[in-house]
Length: 199
Image (tube, rainbow, N blue to C red; front, side, top):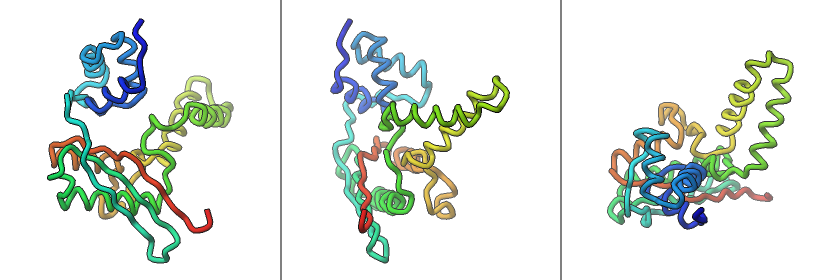
């Protein structure tokens, strides 16, 4: 059985935009064959998966936001495929919007894939205990629903943008996908940092 390296998983993620865990599972099932793994992802996830081939998001922008009281701020890196798009006004505006959102909403991770397994499992155990007095057949659904709600509190892509009126209640993932469709490029929120005076 082929050893699945972190580099192989990242390369598949860059090619498809699929989650890290999904990429790892697909590569394991495909015994390390990236093309076969893409086929498996497409079957499992349908039209959401596209083989972007060598289209790696290696350009981009870093934008910041500092709240008017100068006590909270954020910096984000948002990547795309070409320098042309990285300089595009809509792309830069999106990055600034994400930075202001991060400052206000305080997410802990960019995506669900980044949430450590032990943290997620601990939360799920709490939710399962909270649902223990409910009928057996609905307990798992209740716990999963609470986990999804928890993700929307701590995962950037799952959060509704804090300026809901301006963005019609869309999540950060929906806004990113909208920008990707408009530019025709892979748009990746790579990382962020949030700063608060005294923390």
